[in-house]
Amino acid sequence: MTWVKMLTPRLASCLTALIAALLLAVLAGLCWQVVALFRGVQLPSVGPVVATSISKSSAKNYDVQSLLAVPLFGLRPSNAVAATEIQKDIRRSALKITVIGLVAGNDERGVAVLRHGNKTKAYGIGEKIEVPGTVTLLAVLADHIIIENNRKQEKIELDQKAGATGLRAASTNSRPSNAENVDLSTAGIRELVGDPRDTLQNSPLQLVRFFSVNPVMDGGRLTGYEVKPGRDTRLFSQLSLEPGDVLLSVNGQSLSDMSTQELMKMMENTSSYELLIKRADTILTKRFDL
Image (tube, rainbow, N blue to C red):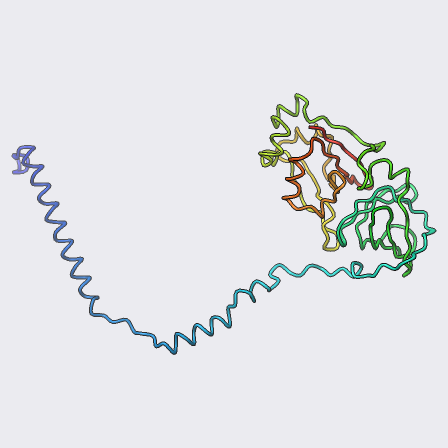
């Protein structure tokens, strides 16, 4: 039996504490000796002239305002059409184009829903209209559009019958004949999202699992948002949406003009949402009631 085993438990504890204290004392002494070695070392001083010159050089080469002005993500494509001056006393166009819907926007962000023959399509400003010849949409106004037909400006007024259907942004009282009402308060929808109004206003991120939304750009301009089903496809099908549908406007306001803050404010002050949707070459209107 060794001498350690002969010690009483209490005495062994005391010896352990004493040894630990001695080790700490030795380590502390070593640390102070190491510190003392570096006390006498003098770091080279930098002259004031050098510091001034470095400061000036840094200010010159790394000016924050200049860096912020650099287009790190590229420049927005210039739109020659937006710079085109709209003439006065423009004559009516003889083209067989029917304006069935207008979503007037700021600058180059307006959208016009045009029908030619049996084809209906939404066009943004600057887009070439799919008709014979060279015809481009120049401007979208409250009750008519301006086009450029072979370098001549012409206007086409909103068809009054189509304007009465509710596709016109300025009119929200009447309902379009192809409109579809969707009641968001049904049991199936509430089972997925709870109270629709409360979810939209207070917890919109809960809807992320149901939808995938991507901006649709045309010539550098935002024209709308493409929607696709998310991980959970149940809500998408209950809303009668189809993958690839493009949302153009909400309650008559073009989505290309609306900021996130404006959209959230609209959600707080309305009990229904009327969406203008582009599906392939067809324009649909859907009304969602809370």
